Image (cartoon, rainbow, N blue to C red):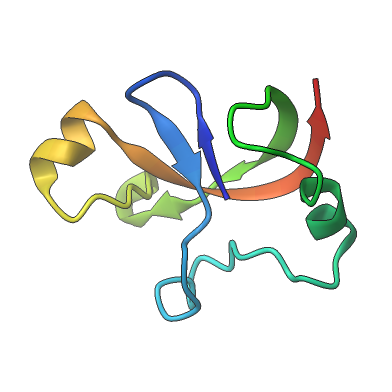
Length: 86
């Protein structure tokens, strides 16, 4: 799940189980949260809640593979708890 907060800043779950071993952000297909996402389309405005995943030294976990992208177009790891279409 990827949500754009601005054109440059995004929040996201990890996109695979290996990367997600520690963060535990993936949404189970048999969950109510997954059901609430099923009707969404790219570009829909949503209201959501959840928690940023902290990395060492109380920093937010950021998923970019290149440092420059982490500074200019960051994607922060997020554990979603609810979603609803606006």
